[in-house]
Length: 434
Ligand code: CMX
Image (cartoon, rainbow, N blue to C red):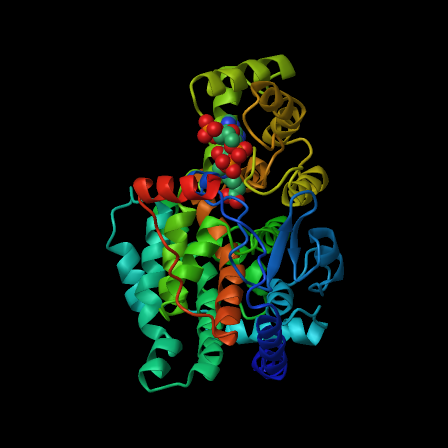
């Protein structure tokens, strides 16, 4: 595999640089921990390491240093398409280099070798009641695939630590290859006729997902590519990526780590917000019998806040401006579905919600995040809202597995921070104050 060859050229140098940095600055202080950090979910504390991406509060996600507009512009695209091969983005995340078309296609080809739906995974899904949330099925299906892990097999055989990344890379490719297959089958089991549509050899990974969903519309193929690229990563500190990182640090394989990450993504303050954002918009639409006016949506937003609830799709732990992922989706909506009622509703929301949240005075960031719009685009193509978080998960797998391989390449250790009792915290705080 071309990707393995390229990484084996790069990893020795990455290790050397990291070792030199550590040797020179071992005891340099880069942050300090306050009492507030412990009560505020460690917000902003600089304690995690990964070269795959970082989030700038104002410019948003940078994949290996490249912003979303840069990535969408520079990555190779399938003939006639406006959205890039997702395989090209995966190459970038792993290597740090923008791929040539050949390199992007090498990832797409590597995926194709694993895009099947094993019988036992299909049977696992079909054994579950249809009122099970799709995220539960998704996480279960990933665990059902775990027995395929090359990492776990080779670890048992005594694979040296310096080569852990190679086995992790094999898992990364095989796992991510199957996710669209598994997810589309879950969708058709829960909401369709339960039949399995196998992937097509002539389609790329993103477009194949659209095909396997049974949505034969080129615009949905474009949306799928865009959707998975935009959701691929948001640095290592977000709840799902951080979960996978912690699990992976025990040398659990990527199947275990990714399944755990999906259980974090299923929470309403994280990935479930896309489903909830659509629900919130739909409730407003129903209440006012169509697209509400600015005054009506303002009234609706205040009702939500006064009931002690959050407005889903707005605010962010790191971002302090409109999420560039939101902007990219907005541009897609303007191009492909400007007359869609819910897209118009998103436009009204953008005009009023930031102002309402500013007046409310609590949220540090009143601007929309990716979840404020992503569901509206899926809804246009008839996709059920309860499935939106699974879509987020398919994309997020790219970043999570890239971080996972990188962590093994850098031979990072098991994580084990220290917890404190309130009494211990108090005495430490008193000591610090004195
Ligand atoms: N609506 C109402 N209140 C909000 C709010 C929103 N959209 N966003 C933040 N706040 C509130 C918080 O609940 C918090 O209130 P308390 O002090 O009573 O606990 C206060 O403002 C300060 O929070 P913050 O520092 O601005 O935000 P956090 O870092 O604590 O939380 C997030 C970030 C995303 C969980 C929060 O903005 C939120 O709940 N948003 C709505 C849910 C959502 O869209 N989540 C998806 C995030 C994207 C992703 O998953 O990657």
